[in-house]
Length: 206
Length: 206
Image 1: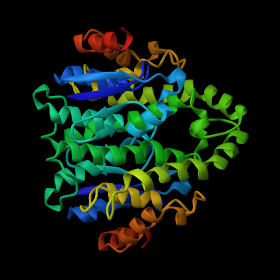
Image 2 (image 1 turned 120 degrees about the vertical axis):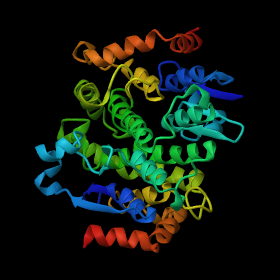
Image 3 (image 1 turned 30 degrees about the vertical axis):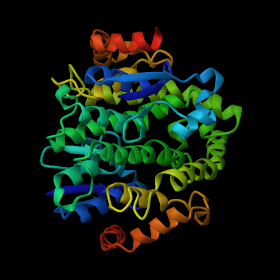
């Protein structure tokens, strides 16, 4: 049995969807950001980074979305969520997910999490003003060069898809006009139609 | 034959070391940041992100260090650079590398690359002042909770080691006192003693 620690509206959704898609037995536990539960001693004992998601396995606790997605895919091979047998295709999928975690998510985080990288209110305001441009440029690259369609890697659904869907859900909040990103918009719609996505969202919001 | 595009002093060193360790046939080509060659039309045709490293394979071009490291390890299995057969151990290695790319490298990048996330000189200065603290805290977590020793994953050298070594090489520039990080310092020394590391550094600086 796997256990996912999550918070609504966070990147934990990508792992949540992947758990549903994989057919895994899992439970979830919600972490309340409003009361700063992610920095409570109890949660820091689970994840010393004070972030979500965390995935409790029978071997230990995993953090970092790209690693959790690989772990779920590799542990439930019948769901065929990653092309492990093809080194180049697998590296392409990892490259996509690495871009999401180290560029797209980071650009987005400068809207609300500026205190990670600066101290002054004027810097936070400056960072916020830049987010539509920096997130928009990263999604522009995805639209132009990376999203093959209909799924990220082409004809086959993989662990890249719920990750992109999760970050694309933040575009409106980041003041990026999704009408300028028709392939990303089409992907978001296709994802929203998947039963696994609807189940994960119902569990998060229910 | 693989081809690595790199620049001295960048994260490309992690992939370079891994190429040497893997026994791969490879060539390298240096990209000159002083003349902004990374944003030349010729290089953007190779890597539209305008960054290094890029790895040219016979199937196509890969970018993003965590993905390139997996690709090299999986393509040259005799070198045993990643525990592919053990889903949990492999996920732990990916979790470590994901933390390096999405937190450690990003914190560091706020010293020189603030224009990615802000516009005002005052913000850049504020970001720079925060780097010793943000990079120091990330390496503090590595020291306390993540670096098992003697190698990152314990007794076995993996693709996590050259990546940590590369980022730990920036600590002095980031004004983090490595004397406060004895395990990281010991790891850096062990890495510097490896012939593959010496060869890669000689090729970069030679």
